[in-house]
Length: 207
Image 1 (tube, rainbow, N blue to C red):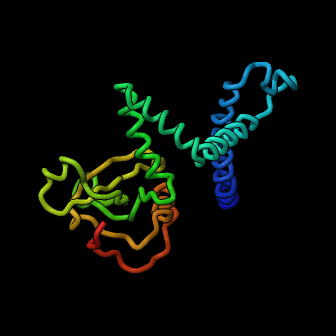
Image 2: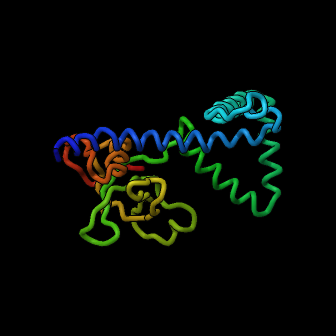
Image 3: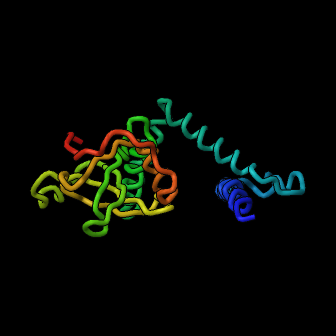
């Protein structure tokens, strides 16, 4: 009896969680229907709500925006838009920061997470997986004598939250696993372990 119950959980839990995530994402994207006049919305046209129509509209908006942004006039329009935003005191700081992060995460040339590493956090002899994001910059680098790297320590099971740390390169151990494998390991709380490869080694290459 116990064996069958556990087997059922192993089959249904991932399915329900996947459906919940997809449903939540579609519900959130359906909010784009609020951009349309009331008379244009499916409920006004057909008399009922149709889940997913807003998601399709969101994808269409993203596609059209990308299409416009890649031509000459679109690029000029974006430059004008960014110029106007740069003249608004508070908005310019927020927009510049968010744009820089999004460019790093989503652009083809971006390299947000460069390497999965092993670090001691939140104290000595307690280890966790982190991702190298670069090197300390700006005035911060002037106050850190030695060779430091910037790392991001994600939380479990939601890796979108975490901690930004600057650590000595010698205190960071490079892992022989891809970023995707490390993310799966973190999200699964250690259940989905990546395959064993070569032994981990000290991070000694330039970043």
